[in-house]
Length: 400
Image 1: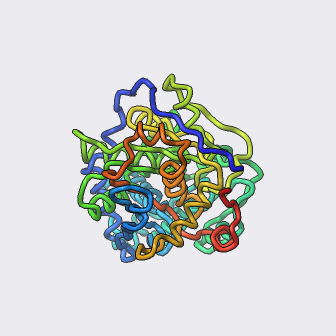
Image 2 (image 1 turned 90 degrees about the vertical axis):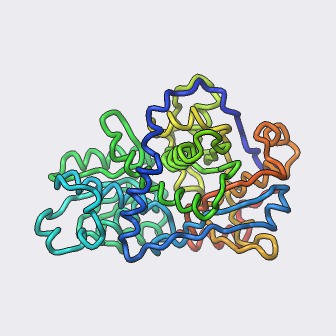
Image 3 (image 1 turned 180 degrees about the horizontal axis):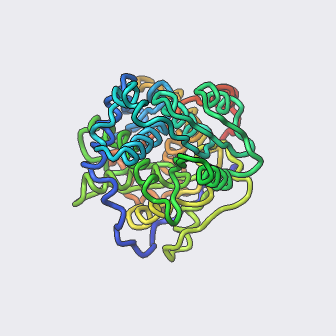
């Protein structure tokens, strides 16, 4: 018998929305304008799963498919690239509107600016995005990966020209390592989507970069979703999505549901404690959801989530595997979505909540029913193809 999903409704005292303005449509539009300047840019598809919606008893189900993003198979490049451009604009004393792809790849820019060394820690997708953006813009990237990282994801980063290593520490310790190295390097800058005291501006820019994905989804959907289910590692993606849709629909925001990997469920633990204080998770953080294996929450995002998320879910690995298979082979007539381990947990969790009688109290509390229009984010494709096939083709981590 599989471990169940653990859940809690949000009964924490709300924060003061001090960070809600980060994700205004105006701020997000600045990021979208920057991303549109790239020749590789195209909006990623919003898969409409009408058959799956009927099967699960919903009014509509929509999945934002980030496996097409910039040819990198994941959304993370949106945040890292925008934050890097904001850093460059600040160093040059120039307006962000001038930071177009054409300018940032020009000989004039390189003569004026030279090179910065961008440091980051990653389980794969974020580091590949930073390395890709650095190569595109003629900059340098140094990437530190935690122990247990996939060799395939390491190779993807190395092929982008970054200096990359796998360290014998967990993700959160890799963040500290990258930050320390950046501080000791001339013109070194750490590009990380988690925040700590004195390091809040760059994570906010990364969240705004993620807003490009949320903004595209809202445009393609063309109406207010009743529910948004989004996954979380440190919480920056979840905070970006929650912040954007809260600003977009200030009078009647969707119900937000946050899903985490069981091995790194720091947000769930904070919500379950109920006092509004964040919690951390230590240890190896071993999970197939490598992109969510983060045990220390981003305090900027935490303030948004503790005020605005309706529920928090702690999901064992089989939940993500279930979602991967459901998206790969959906109801006849629906488009298939190639979704990786960190991208599919929302689909898996939603199906369990709607089909297992044990979760009826949560369904009722969230008002998930035939009138619901649910938006999910598949944030990566098969970034580790061998592992993807083992799960989808061979049935690893089956739900029984």
